[in-house]
Image 1 (cartoon, one colour):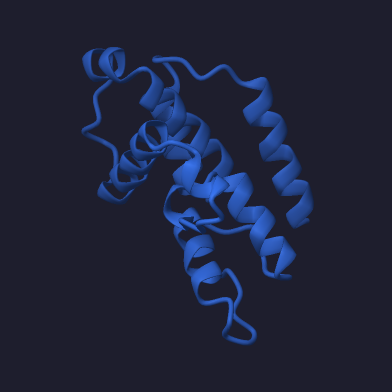
Image 2 (cartoon, helix red, strand yellow):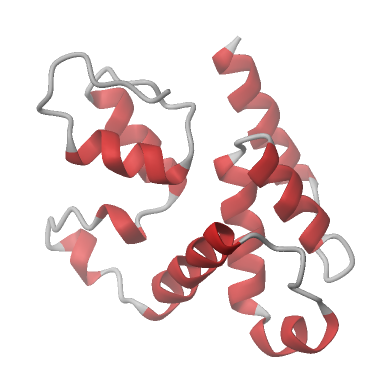
Length: 132
């Protein structure tokens, strides 16, 4: 079932146009349903359209922990890919797909929040550590 959920999420992200009108709805839905890929897609959209988003979107209903994710999206936009090319495992700015790939390589669960994925990778030396 996990693979089906991840596939459905990937198709939804691929087929859905994120707009100023639906960004917050998609963001809150992704956060509520633990859809890391969709959440990242919305965050990337907001990072690419910062000025327009700040004028047209109210962020008053966005939980504080989601704002941290938004800051990561801004950092990722500004940060060059040099860290990853140099072999630096800066999990904090990695894309969800990269985190999931690393988790899968270690035999860990890939269906969890971004924060849990990062913690799992940092703690992957602990036997039996899995995303919850």
